[in-house]
Length: 112
Length: 205
Image 1: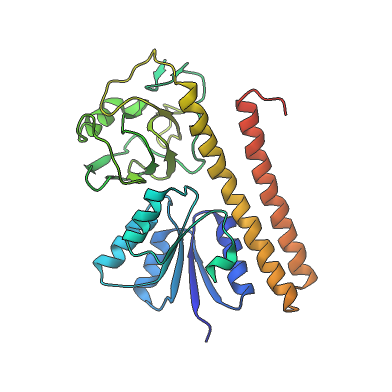
Image 2: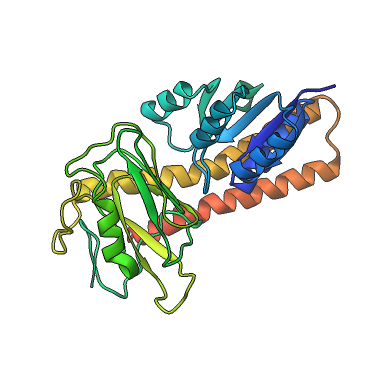
């Protein structure tokens, strides 16, 4: 069974592009328009292998989502995406356990 | 006239919109603030970057927001970026501080326009202080760059995916047409953003 990559981004085009790209690479993909939507899905079936998520989203942002994960003792490899590529932002993401931190637009091969 | 800290604007002049996502209500609340964590909690989310926190004021609820903002110590600088602001329900990206006002005072669910100011933390709004062009340019450039990154990221992902499928023989003509339509639409989105920026700057390109 192919690993499932969960894509969380409020921008529908970015999310759709990532879903298309991962599917093209042979991966199973699930997309979510918000961190809350992903969290609800994960709480019901915590089987995600990896999550690619936008750093800044309306509602719960990427860092807050990971705080929830930490609070619940969950671990999940996460790659943060951001439109604001600053060193402090990257440091904050890594501090919260991000596997990687990529600034948009990114080379999709980096995600594989 | 609405005060914007570093920016003088007439009441009828639309504020610059940082994000198309933001919608809020006059029941918006900033519930708590934790400077050490660089976070303000509430119902809306805005991300602040790179400048001292100043004033966060929707005109319709100015006194309330002023009192909430004083939860932050005068002169406080926040070194952890981005920080998360909470007001009602949307995304706002801010380089310095922010003011908002209801576009329609009669509406219960009013859309707020947000703009940036450069006042230092917890100082009163200065209505007659014009925004320094040296501050405005990098801010607007950062906004433009951010807004262009979204469609560019989408275009790259769709194109790269199509290349992968083409190489594996899995790209149907219908798939290709669909991807190209999306790419055209996203290129149009980027072009529209550039045109808006050009119009706002009075450019003629």
